[in-house]
Image (cartoon, rainbow, N blue to C red; front, side, top):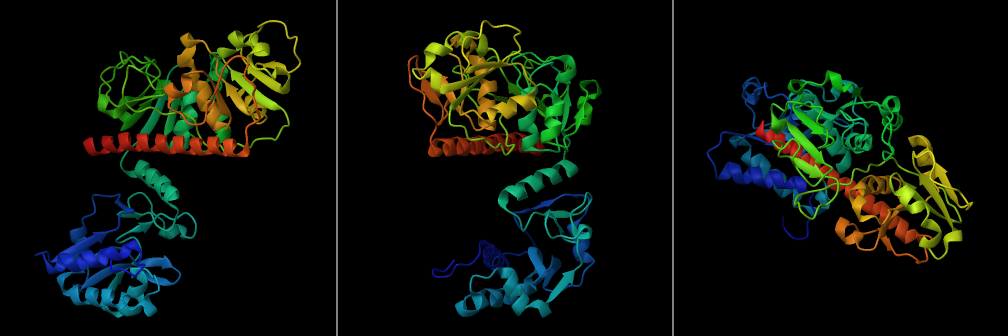
Length: 458
C-alpha cells in the first residue's frame, strides 16, 4: 500500500487481482475472502460460471443496507483488468476515498459493469444479528461467509458451521468421576455432544467439585448429553476422550479419530492414540497442557473479610493446620468443601465445612478471594481440579512454595507457614481474570489445532 493512505486490508485483493490478470494465463479468477468456507463441495463452481453471462466481473447481492453487492467472493475474467485498475486509481483520490472499503468503491464506480447474482448462489451469510433467516447460511449451502461480527463471534460461528457440514464431534466420559472436565468442552463448542455417566445418580468421588450433568444443563442449556451405552466410534469423526484413565472404551479401531486428555504422566492407557493433551505440566513429559476452566461470567460478592476455599482431598490434611498456617488466621473465613462425613472437632467459628452440590459450592465461592492448595507433594497431581475451579470462579490460587514455577502460571500466590494473608487488590483480581481469559484462548487454540489436523488427515 502507498504511504499516506489508510485503506482497509480488503483493498489488497484488488491489487492482487490486477497483478494476477496482468502476469498470468488464467482466463478466470475466483476470489474468496479468508473469512469464508466452502461447506458443500458437491457444488461445482465451474457449472455456476458456465450458467452465468460472460461478463468481466460477477458479484452477489449483499444482505441490505447501503451495499448493493458483497465483494467477499468475486468471479473475475481477464477482460476486467481496466475496471480493476480504474477502481484502484479511484481509491487514490483521498478526498473521495476517506478510508472506505473496496466494496464502497465498487458501488460508486462500476455497478453498471457488473453482473449481480441472487443470494446463496456464491455465498450465504453467517451473521447472527441483522441477517433475515431466509438469507442465513443453512446446511447444503455452497459457501458460508463469516462477516460483520467480532472475531471471536466469527470463530464461534465457524465451529458451529463446521460441525454441521464437515464433521461430527463428541466428548466421552464413561467414568463415575471426572465430570469436572465437561464444562470446558461445552465452553469451547456448545455443539459437541457429550456421552457421560450422570454422577448425581451414581454419586461421584468426593474430589469432584462438578458432580452432575444437571449442573452443566443450567450453565449450558443447549448442551446435549447421551448415555455412554449409546456411543459408537463409527458414528463420529472426532472423539474427545476426557480421561486417559477411562478404559470403558474397549476397542479403539481408529486412533486418528481421538483426542485424549491425560490426567497422569504415563501414556500407557490407549497408547495407540497420538493426539494428547494434559491438564497439568509434567516434568517427564513434553507437549501442550490446558487448564479445564471455562467462562460462566462469574460474579463475585464483596466481603470485608478475606475468604479462602479448599476443595476435596486437601481438606482432611489442612483442617488441623489452618490455625497455624497464616499469622492473621482470625481475619480469614475458611470454606472447606469435602464429602467426608467427619473430619474432627470444630473449635473455630471462622472455619466452615460443607458437603454440598455444585450450585451451592459456586454460591459460596462468590465470597472467596483464594483457593488454597495443600502442601502434600504426594497429592500434587490432584491440584488440577482446584486450579480449574479457581480460574472459573476468579479466585487467586494459594500454592505451597515452589509450585508456581512447576505450573507455569502467573497469578498464583505462594505461601509458607506463618505468612500474613492480605485481601487481593483490584489490580490482582483483574490479573486473575485476564489470565483466566488467556488460558481459555490457549485451550481453544489447542483444540482448534488438533481438530483441524484431523480434518486435513481425514
